[in-house]
Image (cartoon, rainbow, N blue to C red; front, side):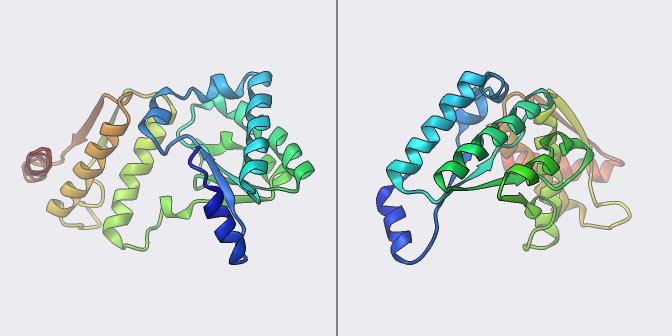
Amino acid sequence: SLASKDYVDQAHAMGLKVWAMVENVSTRESVQKLDTKELMSVTSKRKKLIENLMKEADTYGFDGFNLDFESMKPEALPHYVQFIRELSVSCRKEGLVLSVDNYVPSAYTAGYNRKEQGIVADYVIVMGYDEHFAGGEEELLASCYRSSLKLAVSYGLSSIAFPSISTGIYRFPVDRAARIAVSVILGFLGENPSLREVFMVCFDAHTRQAYEQALCELEN
């Protein structure tokens, strides 16, 4: 836990509420070693986790919890939803707020069952920055690659192939697009070893040269 009683007390002194984030993506260890299906599919483990969260709330004085579980495999999702149901019961008993972060709705994320979340949680939050960034076109392009890579990992894929996104009819400059794509891919692979291969499918020699140059620059 990274919780701080002093932080919570200072926030409360300023009239602010504190929701503790419970997630699976902030550290390399949590991404590589945490088996969410194993954790969520066993009733006794869910119960123990919820009991520990209630103890943490009492110790630090949290006002609620925010769940942010990403890149989960499809078979783990029904158990995650059940965890949300059970956690909501304990939160209500203790007067705690429960919020749940979600991907932008799509066929690939339907298993998160936002409708059921809306019944049992206080807030269901769609993380819109996964699709639209305030940083403009470059951040939007980066988000396309990043979101696709997350989906690949969530479905247990070991490889994925991309075209040169946005450099065709949308006329995004190839050199810039290549640096964005390669930077996002290299960073993601460094934190997600289960994805072993990423292929760039280039339409012509000029596009291939741009990606090869970007790879050379960013790897060195």
